Image (cartoon, rainbow, N blue to C red; front, side, top):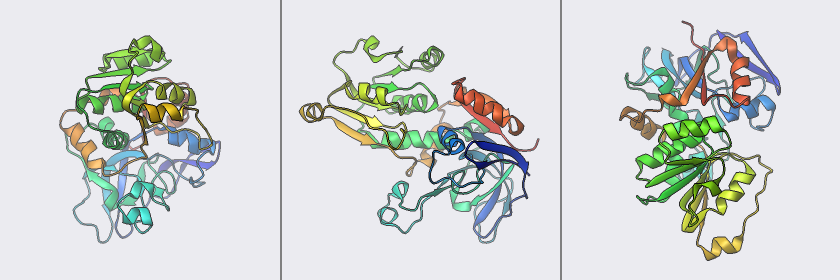
Length: 332
């Protein structure tokens, strides 16, 4: 099979690898679609300490089962699946209290073991979620990022009629906008310096868009402010936009060493809640159910590249072109 292998930080090659075999409890998936994510950029740059080299990245994957290993039940060749890449250890303190996304010995498909930028991948059967026929290949590979947005929503207080401000009109910010709208937001405003992204956000249902939050004309602030950028300037600005009694959600990923400045007195005096959202937690099947019920996220996919154009896909991602970029690795 063909696969993209990151041999070392800064070096990715398209090469031939032996076809994977389905071990006990595993299935082999023919990957029809796999999203390119900021995590993949960190792996390529050598900025993710847990990443394995050499390794095949790609964790937003979906496809069709082509082989089933010993002991696997309920799945068979020909079944379309989305793959949850997260593999908590199951035995640490956090796993034992039901917080597997905070696992002390966390591993993940596409990070610590080979992932979806390959024609075939072997994955634990327990990571596979059966897809309805109605979902397109593009939507199938959106299940993993949508499940992150669903978990972020689950971390927030549910107060229908709240006004939301989201920093970042990239894929994850747009997904957060979609799920909070589904949850009963009175309005969703979005901030992004990229005019093309703002134009798309407006067409995708945002009530107000602007390159800077002060242009939104809501001096009283917002009940919920969400950072989907990981940019310190956006985080610091957003913390100042939270209304009294409101909530700030840190959803975007920053550099591990980054710090932000805020006023503890303001947090105290205004009773502001500051919370975080890490990856996926009991949100994969709800994400599939949302897509199946009519949540249309296909417009978020702006480009689909073949596997042999992986370098072009990475270049487009780094240039900020389009929205969600996907790779279609499977043989035609």
